[in-house]
Image (cartoon, rainbow, N blue to C red; front, side):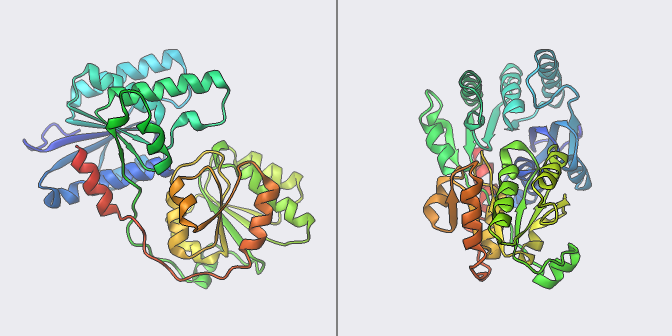
Length: 371
């Protein structure tokens, strides 16, 4: 961070494992780029920077907004003792050099190391945002117990733990010695602009006349895309033609493309890759699918709801959605049930665009209030 920062400005350093693009990265981007603009409303001033491990789109977008970034070469997602020790050393060096007033931790790996380094370096305020408790992932019992302890320890070392979903709040409130630190701040978004169906279809080069279903998200295991492709194959056997579009990229793209070929649905499963400002194209589709096996409150659900699309999702999502009645829910990893609900979803007509239940301004004010 610039050492010539004015006296009196609070230094906020965000920490995240991967500076690629996804829900956690969007959260960091929104806070990092909007906090300075909120200074007048909050009677405070912030000097913001972001530290990260793996480089990617978030880094590029932050630098495009003149937000200072700090690469941590040793910080990776997977657990590796030697690189974790190096990451911890790099973090302590960074904290001692930058002397942030607030360290805001995101993603479990970076958060655990950052909380420990922050306490060692005497950081005044350590904030930990949980983007879905990692011990909810599909792992063996020993791994889940270890991850649960690390999550608890991170929350214990932090001064405040923010959760973005009601279900994660329920879990956090029951944690020994940390329950009172847990604050629920639901995700919020700014007003959205949608292209018309024809404009969006043209921009994405979509010509399919059959019903169109879309998923937006990084192509990783937790997102459950393999079950969505299995569902499309199941629908093909039933004689139901649905075109399925995936907006996003990731480590499983080649594997998922091969799966579509193996199932004979590569003509119905379309990989659009990463799409800038993907939400603006939602009106090109007839329904939204979230097939995740581990999830919280993703931005894409908010966007699909505002766009008025029928939504089918797995029941791993936040309890807010379970109680809302807006989303049709099925158990995770169940291609046949996904297929049934997708077939029903395409029979529903698009609703009118609606307003978001939480705004970005609300998130900014509540979060900065915890600083």
